[in-house]
View 1 (cartoon, helix red, strand yellow):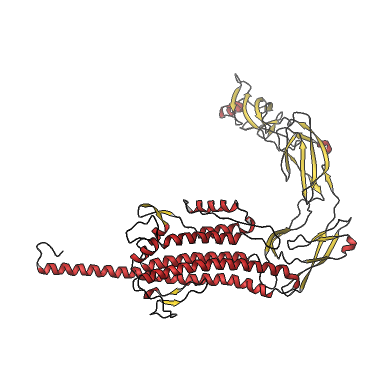
View 2 (tube, rainbow, N blue to C red; view 1 turned 120 degrees about the vertical axis):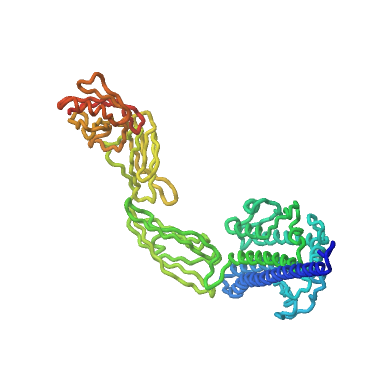
Length: 587
């Protein structure tokens, strides 16, 4: 446009198009910059929420510390004091990091010629609203920034180069920012996982830098492995420590616009307009404040607030210790909470008379040990715990112990036979014990309701032993029985519903091998092949499976009434033994 042999009119029209295009570009740029301003505003509001969230955890512990005044709760007060000291260290680390990032923001704004000295809260015409207060970042109104689209200052200050310069090697404040951010990650994880309270075991974690990884799943695996190899309290702290580390982790070298090994700082602030750079720094503050809230919440979980104190939880399931076959058993399963610094007081009625011993293992419960008598025992008493004011709050309890005489029983001594290759069903009960065990020699035992017993011996006898299992896992032998070991009985051959030696229906097409009603074993036999002899036939007819061919049935039916049909069959049972079975039937 505006060149060549164009007329003055054409040149003017071309110039107007050029100006219009530039104006449109400016409008798009302004819209994008305003979007960064809106993003920054939302991040600032989210940061305030994170600050107040963390403050809430701290204030709750502080109030609990002030309210704990009973002399008997001195141990708990010391624990609260220790927790507050650890929370103060977390606040100090966070404040230092927030302060540095705020100062970096001011350096960028000052470098662009913005006015960062005047503060006027909620004044839409003022850029600076509230000065930083502890961990609360400086509150800004980026809509009043004049140099929103300045690319050079963020690049010069943070990356240490001008626009279009090297972004793989960081020379500016970004190098310090990267070092401080990673050190904060190590410090906050260490503060959350290293401690020793009230004479309990000492726990410690010394995290190392992990800034190179593939996927997020790989990062989690690497961090989890690092925490597991430490001396941290894995039962209570592992999940929190892993989450803290991951949320504060940035991949150091990245591929950016087809350029490999670009430093995270260079990638983040490359060609970043001023308002976008400020938003990126506020986003880092959000992660820092979020980590602070998680760490403070974690420390708060180690103590409690409210009228009663609970700082530990444990699963609990209880119900009848003894039940008979076919009974409905009811278990009550729950998660119980208790204060390890405030143990209950348990009392048992007639404790001296019953010779009971009451102990406190430190897990929020009292343990009563008492010898069982000869008859059912109805036990009752009270359990009490102190509230925060030091007053005992009691509750009644009762429990019935049914006394049973321990015994074992295996009946039908004349039927003490175990069959080889067969799943012998055996029921065994140790009455009076919480559990029953069945063992033996020369057998393989599986299942339990009933047991499945298969002889493994080649000898003529095997032994079964029924035992009772006590509540603490001990086994008490109750009875030992010797069984004869035999092969499975030979089955009878059936043609349809007719057994060998009886009259059969000549139209029946199927052969079976099974036990008669006098043998109650549930053993299945298959007919593999058959040979049929028919009066008048030149030779026997053979076939496989248990179904007669239509040719055989026609020959049988044509042989006339009163004749005898004979079969020789190969059958196989559950023991894998092949047997030859013959049968003669009248038609």
